[in-house]
Length: 115
Image (cartoon, rainbow, N blue to C red; front, side, top):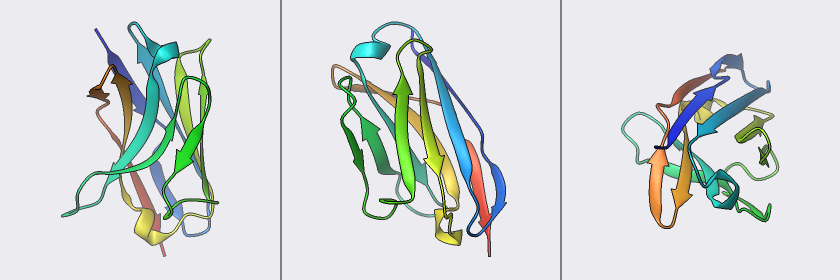
């Protein structure tokens, strides 16, 4: 059974930083593509960063150069370092695990950026 638990969200001023962490339990972590999504009010959930089992990363244009995804296959965690935060980054952030095409989600963590 896959369980993903996010932490690290909160309230921060524009220009500040936060680091989100996701702890995964269950099988297949080291072979899974891990990702971070976010969903702002009245908007679709969007993929903002992903990392393959080989460590290849991809970041959405909206966060490129400001956010960095990383993983630790010993601790079974995936982190999202968020720098130079903007008010438009305000959203609920979700960790995801892709196991053979099936995507599993965490419960989400709120990030609020004040101007």
